Image (cartoon, rainbow, N blue to C red; front, side, top):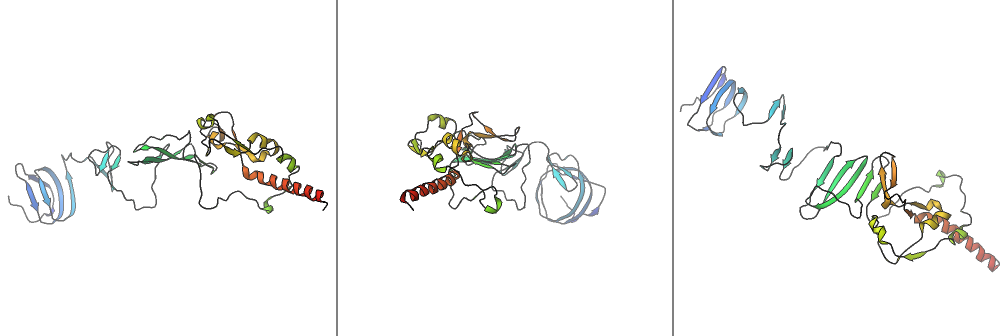
Length: 293
């Protein structure tokens, strides 16, 4: 079959009928092809020339499911696979993907990013109801489950509060709050501190099984040591708070509420330090008095 060496500024209708032959190799330059290709039947195995401008309309081409709109190209039905012939998602990449950009946006009513570990536990980042969750699940899964009724981490986006669902350890210092005298007023020493301390017990104890069922896993289930929140509450209520394991955020009330409805308590041990300081000072004064100083 004779093939012209070049197509330069051709217009009109160009018919290429290759019914039984394969169009194997074209090594010429197509500078401009202006017109309509109405029939192209055959197999083009290699196109090794340069097409500088191809301004044509190809009719009857049904193999492509992509639609062009200006400089955009889109595909509205089905899934797209890269590195896979059986995509399961709108965009399914089987291999390493690289994004050279400043932003990666996941938008939706409750957007979630999944980290599916194929041989260990999986992890998820989940945003919903003004809360950002760090979740966990089984091996290679999109399902998340709690440990002792707790999630690994919850960040409250409305007030910056954070809740850790297990032990929290820091290699360095954990610094918070404020104690600057310039920010305080109505400063009054704690009165009758020694009397208040005498109403407290330092005890050893065993945790009930009910605590674990409610989602609290103590470091020492047996022969633990501490104080009793209700006793502290009577003499220094500022040192008592609701136990985090029993708290969950209520979007309706815009505050934490008790999961169990029992409002279980815990003690802020650092708040007891001022009471102990004043108790020691009172005790020291009594000792000096007994010594006749």
